[in-house]
Image (tube, rainbow, N blue to C red; front, side, top):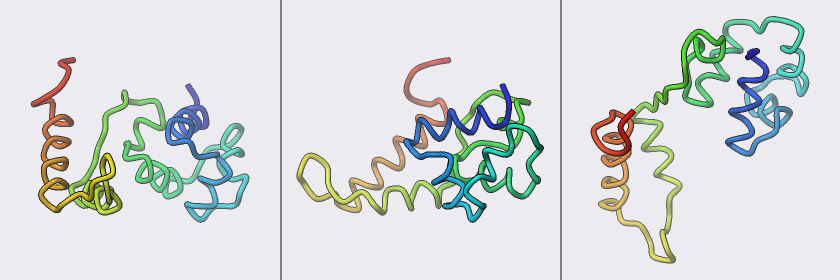
Length: 113
């Protein structure tokens, strides 16, 4: 699978268009589309990898998908979580979600591979 197709697949899962992704990352609106025929610069590929929390090697097809979420990334994702089922989330709720997510990503909980 090409770099462009891997990025397209990730963008589709996040429900963001390639054009919107390009602009969000500070590229020209057609930059990622050009990667169908050209090779991206390493620093541009790194920006895409950081956005999707994957490795550059994954985007290049050198490894399978594995999620890499830094603690600060997880905390910032939870920062936007204001309510669940109509009830406000407490800091304790957010901490419990953070811990459960870390355990799941580390393979200590959830489906076995």
